[in-house]
Amino acid sequence: MSPFSLTQKQFPINGSVHRTAAPSPASSSSETTKKERKYKTIAEIYAKAKYAVVEKEDYSDIKCEECGSGDGEMELLLCDKCDKGFHMNCVRPIVTRVPIGSWLCPSCSGQPRVRNTKKRRRRPGTLVCYKKKKRRLLPYVPTDDLAQRLEQMGSLARALTALKMEFSNDLTYVPGMAPRSANQAILEDGGMQDYETVKHCRAMLRRGECPPLLVVYDSCEGYTVQADAPIKDMTILAEYAGDVDFIKNRERDDCDSLMTLLLASDPSKSLVICPDKRGNIARFISGINNHTPESKKKQNLKCVRYDVNGECCVLLVVTRDIAKGERLYYDYN
Image (cartoon, rainbow, N blue to C red; front, side, top):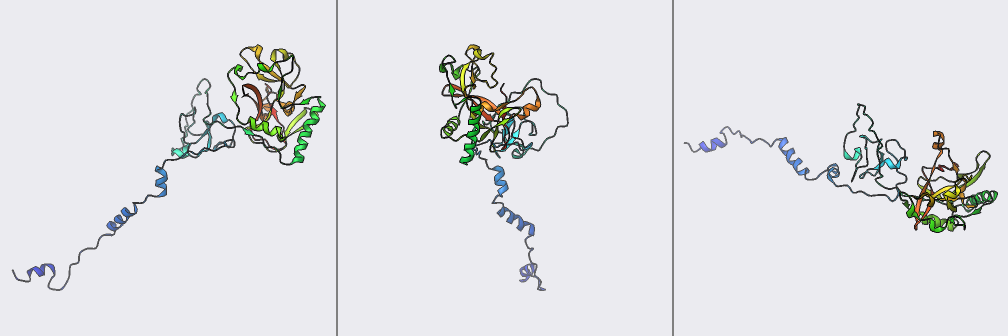
């Protein structure tokens, strides 16, 4: 073999050089991608990160994201991720009962919205629903303007004077009627609700901070009560006051403002509030005719019996947002 044979294999004699091929762009981009893939995007982090449930202090303004209504709180579910409200019948797929544990809305769970075109037969019987989160009662907000507050108190004073009544924010026990020992919340058939903001409302009343209400005389309905400022849903407006007596003693009483205080298993121990001689602004709130749908639409208050230190009391609670100037109605029955 000639001495140039090895050289000729590597470098040809004609001087041309066989250069090696440059690395392909695909291989270099793949290496760059691998280096960049070390860092995840925000979307990937959020998709795998655990969410934290942060509860609000007040859920009174929660409304359904589908229908926009805040009514039917017994059927209103709260998403444990976005904390938005959905009615059980508005969300798709429909939720037949309150789920046990955490619940995510379709947007947070990533499930596609399903629309079933098949007609389903309604299940016989009534579905019993339980609230997932309890909505808190709110204390009323008194009017800051002292002159306006005096006008509110003056309207109540004129109405009480016209009916020859004494003002009282408390239950009174008159000799010859039901004694205070008869007012025991433990006797209530089915139990009662515990109170949370009643103390605060009573303290405001003792300071002269009355609820924003006006007593207005109507030629057809007589004395009525209307809101003197916007009032939020689930607000405690007043505590029903008057003389306490046994229901059996008032079976033939023609007073149209009697309020049930205690429904005991033994009918002889049931109590009623009689605001004919003593009472407060609750005495002048109008009742509705619960036999017609039109009258039921007017109702914006409800009566709730509470256990306060072992005794029964009746609170008037707002069932929906009330605008200024709107008249107050509730079902006496």
